[in-house]
Length: 157
Image 1 (cartoon, rainbow, N blue to C red):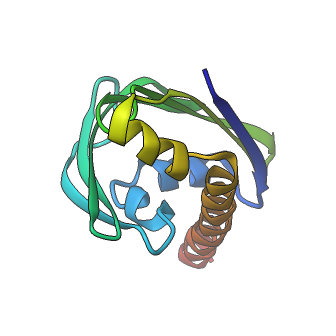
Image 2 (cartoon, rainbow, N blue to C red):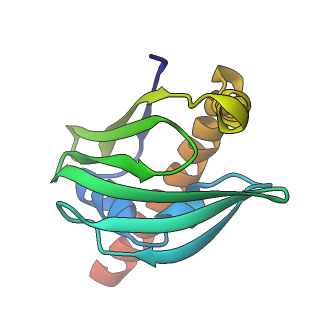
């Protein structure tokens, strides 16, 4: 079973990183172009919450339903209930480094289907593509958390 791990530091306090990931618009922000996310429904992040969306990779729609598990202040896991892969479990873990820095660890365990969808996921979820996607996510997370921290500082000033 393939596994993908990615880790990075964010110059923001743990509550800021948590707030960003709890925002229902985060998925759209974190998806790199040219992929387009079409949200069907997203419940606020909580134990058992469900997100339904379609990832458009060119003309190809990847319909996805994810269930959230192990939701806590230190992260959560989204598990593909239905979608293009045979299995997809993505665990996000947030660790406070100090009062102004947080480590984000991303861990994905996945399996491919056979046939057409297996070919699609082998291409889309290849190591180079996942690495590019998570480099983009690192950039967006850092940028969004920086902006959130700036707004919070301005409110309290």
